[in-house]
Amino acid sequence: MRRLLGLFLAVTVFFMASFAQAQATKGTPKAQATMKSLEKKITVEFKDTKLTDIIEELKDLVKGVQIRMDSKGGVSGNRKLTFTGKDVTVKEVLEGLLKKEGLCYGITSNEKDAYDGSVYLRVGTEFGTLINKK
Image (tube, rainbow, N blue to C red; front, side, top):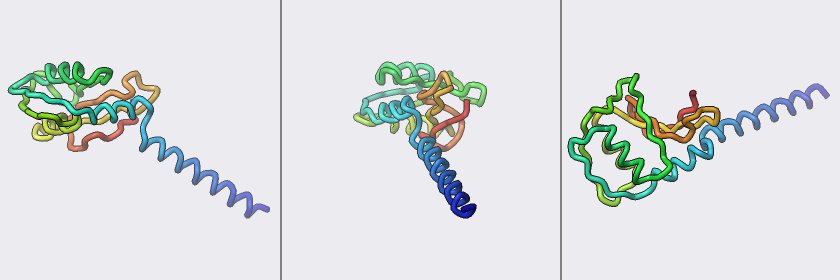
């Protein structure tokens, strides 16, 4: 009987851990909506444009998407960037703009975070990762 109970507990813990991992990989509903929005095709032309202006234009082009930057971590809104893209996804625009500057973006995926679902620009090399920290 103990062996059966132990097996049952092990299987239960395994499935709970698997479910939690699947939820973390999938993201919150807001994070999923943002990932879908980043697939929208747009046409942009930025030439020596301040990052803050680029963010505002992207937010106008893709309604409902919040874009924030890690100013404490070294991302400056005054940084000027250049990128031209015709009929490209927002994801491609972000990667094209940020990669050569040593920047990347993640998507906040934490229902307890006021910024759940927002795109977070930061220093780094990983694009589109889910951020669970508050």
